[in-house]
Image 1 (cartoon, rainbow, N blue to C red):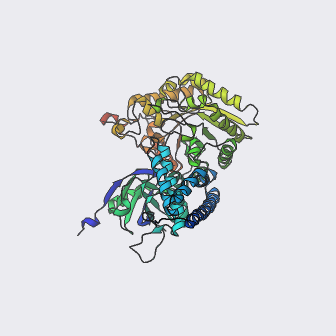
Image 2: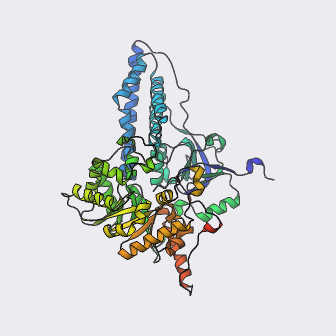
Length: 570
């Protein structure tokens, strides 16, 4: 007879790294410094405490440098910059002055570290900027590192269900917060996934988890205290769902979807050209492994987010050239920085806007900030040497704006020994879609950004849960718009693709094909499923004597909201 303890329990959190994992859990304890030694110091003890703090700082700096070298080798320079940023925080003279000042006032080194960094972390967490809030976790990790050295402690597993700790091997690790060091310092090749109480989509750790390919879900309050060590858990990093003690039927359904790490590559199919979306240069390896026919969307702004800073021309060039060489001879489409809206970059000091989605973002920001566009344009031109690349402009509103962007790019790169550069645009603003014919007369190619296009066509915030039901492509007006753009591209003999969540949802693959689209760009791990869906559609069409059928959506019986998984931004 099943007891309450045997029944499955479901939690819903924030999906921060895609994939599905099933296995027992390991509990990882990070709250080991809730109570630290606290005592009063005076006289000669003050200098002794300052020396302890300096020595701890040097140990932490050395460890961060080792991590930086390891990550640069395993994942790439962009991810390694995370630890450079933490080291810069550590070496900040103002921070050391404040901690030394606290010691001079009579507290020990541990208390000085805790008080100073807690104060900074609290201030950042209160700022109305999601990106800056995520940076507060870096300060928290820096505090833990310093206290680890001062207290001579280290992170630990809470192994109550077995006599020998397996340190996460073939386990799902549950912890309070996913930090960059935890993501990398554990034997990540053997981990099944992460479940955490805190940590957002744009956090450094989330970016690393996606680069490594470890499924992760965050935002489940007190999960660390609710699930005993060794309990079987089903983790869905695509939807954010975590099932504790899943029933056999639940496990069977998950098995049908397949675990992300076990997705087998599928050879290209004739019916549909499937390219890959990537956010960092290291993901080109996964795109290649999944037999992507090229990169259809390289979200270059995420290199800046991963590094925690703006990147100069040389730093950008190294990343871009790596992708070009990794995918050669297949095409690579670089989207120019799409910053603003729901993707602010604090380092730019952009003014706060009442409605940033309708403000200075994408193409408008590139034209308004030539000092931001110039190094990227030059880095891309250098990366194109000896080959062809595609440069795509985001949030274009019309022909005049596209011309200004292309002219600015050419002017900024006039003295660069470049290869062949094709210029295109994202169709995500309704005005551009309605003027598709004129734009295709100017542009070399185009890509429909379905995430933002849906948002603007139906005036619905895709990140607002209260109106999520309206964020759906199941409306004839949307498909009429897609068909008209496909027709305009065909008439101009220009390539057109579609990226975003819609491209990866295999229930819509037949409708996309019926609309005239023959190229999509999706996350590397979704390439196989999309190809299989396209192949099934082509097979059905070949067996249909009356010719291609019109594929209807569910609009007739009520619109179905599109999966708005926030870990896959436009």
